[in-house]
Length: 288
Length: 235
Image 1 (tube, each protein chain N blue to C red):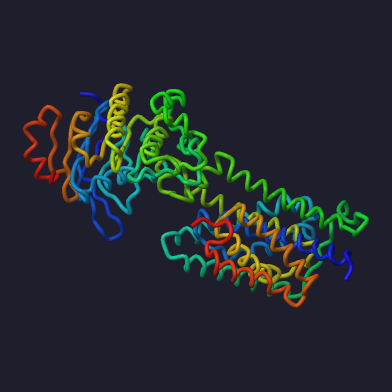
Image 2 (spheres, each protein chain N blue to C red):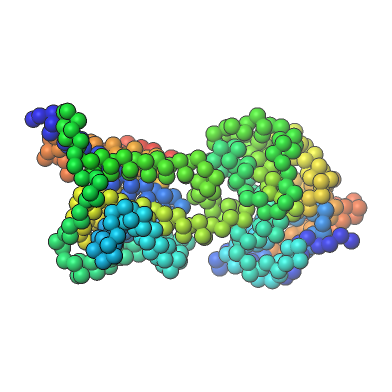
């Protein structure tokens, strides 16, 4: 096996890791404040890719427009879901939120499969990002480099927003004790709506990133989301840095496994999850 | 007599199915320190929570600075000028000491500046960089829980069991702080178990039992009421 192949797998690992990190980050933010395990997340990622596809083919708005518009549209659709449905479940067991979001995912995917079939739709790469860099030891497609860098920047930006700003302090405080933060005069219900919209918007954004790499297809989310949930469990439910580090880290580990022992590449994350659950059930970055 | 800052009338409150307040009536005037005394479970903490809308359901009337708030959501009520220091202090472990201190949003002009706050609570100045609010000692956490509501411009402070579990020297310090706050014109409702702490500070006392006000008397009447208090408080 060549070093070229090794670097190739590492690159694929980093790309997959970018999506794991972006998606598990949104899940972590949502779980932290809403206490809801958002099973619709994969479908919302798929929705992001489809909205980008529609913008291009129906409205003539290209990739860069999609990057700006799709997270907002998908995020707003999430806020509507939160206002109309999720809001009624906060006082109930986790299980109800899980059931509702799982059901929504099935409905969304069903609608898109019915309309567009299971075959993927192509989404062309923006022209400015086509081509490859020759790094000497390997060829690096520019679009993939862009996705890795942009995802990392968004992840770190989100971390900064939550851990280092006043807005983030409200969010962390409300995660611990929402009633008290409300008693101080903060409109926590609105914050919850916006937070859900933000987390879902991140999923939509990941969908736009994914559209030129993978095909735009109704089941693109459901195949990814299972791995993402494993990432969330390994990183620690609700931990921001945990989702980022484990997202990228597990992507790379998966890539390396593909190189050294390809037979295990689709199970390695779940093996790690099982080991982490046995040794540190709260996850690598989880508290208590 | 000064204007009424808080007027609670026929207040009933429920947590789910359990009916915890059965028609509470009391009032607090500007600049007063008033206590709610009573045994555990008499409804004192629930009364404070009901004022802030933190119970499941409530009926009756709660006027804050003349405004009827019984139908309001919690986050609007604070903006009428209420600062709340909960039982168990409510310090956030994911926030640093400084973040905890500046967390409550400003709700009115005229709050204390950070310098004034640090002058009142010198320990907090030294500990402000501590990365986790809950790393402070119990006394320091209590100071922090009070300090953070003085910044906001609130003029009515609802303080729930601020002396609970603290060493006598810290309880004395808290007593001096209450006196200073009263001098600065704050109106204070103290929910207290520690009657010896509350007695010299308060202008008036309310005694609660079974979710309603059972007795009320002013500070000068205290001497003649000790017998009755022993009975209600079991001290």
